[in-house]
Image 1: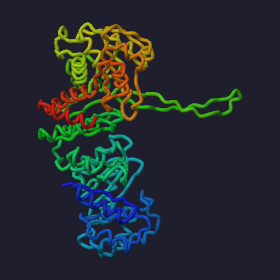
Image 2: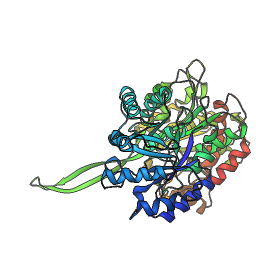
Image 3: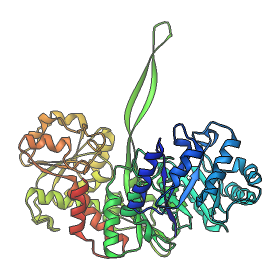
Image 4: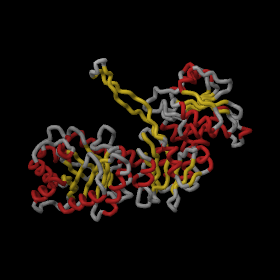
Length: 539
């Protein structure tokens, strides 16, 4: 079983003792005492105090600054401190590969049998090739390590796959971790690939390395105690991804039905590269979101004489159409996804083929129908959308799903987008009208019109964003926002202030997630009441 280790990074001995007790109460298996974090550390006085009555097994690390730690003294003092920790009965001591031979020589065969020696290597820039990682593991073994530790850094989520390949072939106990948010998968899936331990912090203020999840997340969200070699891997492929509540929702529901899978936030930059890299059958299903983030460019004002002037930083939205890219990545598509030209759900079949679905469509349209007051019938003639005008803001995957679904229900569609050409393309596809986003400020829709925001404007943490000025909202009967975090966006709040009926993106979130859950699990009915309870709690 992979052990759960909490790093203790307190500035004082007392703070570390309090955190050790908290780690034990929270369900950790051991603690790592980072001696280099203690201010004014006195080995002979402080080590016995730290170890006395510690409620958990202890790993002692005294990391030098040249390996990413805070100790700036000489090796001799550090070696003597680590040996003292061994004599006092600690369970593990960590030493860096760079001085591993030197430390083993210092011990002269006097290492207590109880204490296991972890020899570690840290790369804060990148993750080497599989060949280089395997050679690194061999070098660490040659030093005489009881446990091999290799920590690298992910510049792309596909880097983690190389660590997994080395871990499953390692013949000695190994800790293999990939730092940064893109490397989170390495920490959560450590039990699946045979990792000796993984780290979970007490809270976000007590981190010792980039990308560490909290112990609570590992235990309560990812259910790490139940992850094993046969656990299927599901996840949300997006950029950004950390704001999403999908991992909480899906993991709780998977646990409730006893399905052996874990759902992860997967920060990716290239959808096709991700799917090609993680092509094993156990990587069996994915939710897809657009990448929608702020990029910056720089330019300089120049005077007439050509001198350098003020540096100007320009911010603009950059969107990579993951839901559109997914169409080209899948071998098969359901009819709805093919018609829409966007996919938000991918399932890997037993033969390795990828099948694409779109559950945004029914999630958004049924939520809007219920918001209008209809029954959400699949019969367009009975739909409350039939004959109405709907203004769809955006031209990405969610906008395509809403525009397609509204047309299918008998609505007339207007598409407004910052990039007018994309609005024209989508409007033409559904027989509608195109507008520039700025045109909505003065657009006067007919009575009974619905506004549907399908962009990320207003999404946490940029909660002040809104696609339509407040003064223009009073002309709509219903305003729907696909953004679900926060539950009440600025757009919805301002619409309500005009007395307009609003529909939260939480409704779409839950309904599309129900469809995804059933695709992921091979037809197990989604626990709707639990999904709604979780959505209400976390949005």
